[in-house]
Length: 480
Image (tube, rainbow, N blue to C red; front, side, top):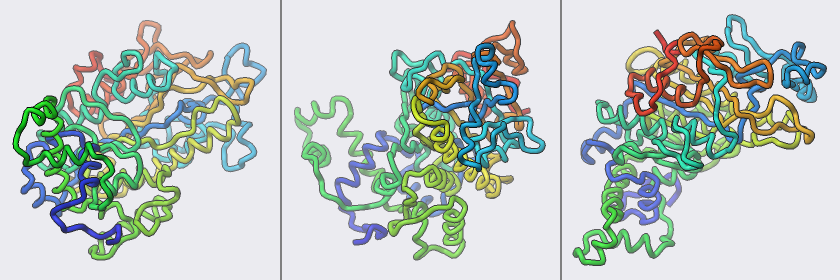
């Protein structure tokens, strides 16, 4: 049987079930929707009225190259002892495609660094927050801090991921419930207080996503998995009760039923960009448009192979999941290779630009795609772009930059003001700013911004309860 075939055998492969059940990791993945009702709805999924994307740049980005640039004619090598800042844009000159000055498109109130590529053209739908104090320069701590909005205990996350929090609050009230409300693409996810319906389907690659969503018989390689599945329908024994003391068997039994429903719905067909057999003409055209927009090279199995986990491929999968109503929240690792203590500025810039250009294509897609509730998808989507911290404003002896505590982020689309800069880092060493939370202007009577404030703002902009953050949102950043 080919990879694009659908297995109609009711005795679906154990490995397929275990793969999907482990990924879902929840016994109520579809909320209150019955399996029969979900199966009936599967052919006519409706996009969520408010979608979310959380895009992570892995490794700690150089914010001088993206969201918090400096003018190299002002911050010169001769003034390093005074400013402790060296933009280093001249070090990109070996690639003439990089500008050697900050980018400010006509009409933009936001200046961008040289690495953002086409992303700068979308200034009209975003706000940039600068001068965020991360309180850490440790990778895992900073990443989990921004992912959850709560400073970790040591390196352990101590709150649900923001995507989980969003789904936890919104999903039970939704009329049209997406089958995979929370999708995490090569990124961690946490759930500390909601039912299984809010858990993320975690996949590490495009291949994993298709494996999870499509029947693909493979050999069972774990005797433990076989025993767990074979316990279904067996008489209850003391051993079974002990095995299920924490609900493990029950969870897998329920997950098996749910996964069968997902597989019967063949959701994988949306993500096979080269396969148009059996698709209506409109769907085939949409797939072709996706391949062209994101400049994908597609393999025989329908997956982008440029490579399969490129930034562009991930952005295309995210757009498809949102627009087809498969997911409401998608978190993704959009770009990596940024932990550049050694090497050249060009390495950091190239790795960043791949992610920024992929995000630019995603935003263009959302700007141009009609949402069934009216307006465009960008009017119904909030995108948060972040990294765990930034890199030092001075270049080290090895030609790279080290870890720096001050950070910045971008919030795009619904819920926030557009074409807006909020907060600032200092002009000496790019220290975290002390600013007014209502105006975003530097103010000695103000406070520093933390990831807690950013996440509270995102939640407030969505009309959600942000009290778990225990801070107030940045009210001057909210739309309206």
